[in-house]
Image (cartoon, rainbow, N blue to C red):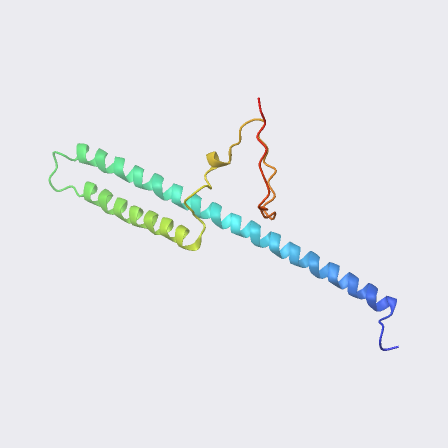
Length: 140
């Protein structure tokens, strides 16, 4: 009876294949969630750096007005240096996001996904268009 596997072997194979597919699904969902978490961390870092640049800009302006009578004050210069470092880090984070694909240009903005009331979003992405397919336009 080497030719055909017994029912026990078939059942074990089925159980193992289901277990394997569940593990693969868990790993894929974990990867998606980690990837989404990385996107969130990068976007949060960009927002924090942008806020830091703006705060440094206004602190430099404040130091410029407060220390206008003092010639030996370097607080404005230090604020400029901090702003320069923050702006460089901001640009590096943005370029890193584009390089890794975590940031994209195009139709991925939230307002591009808005639909009109009554519009249908039922689009089968896997369906290929046939030459005889004609869109029906409803007449009002």
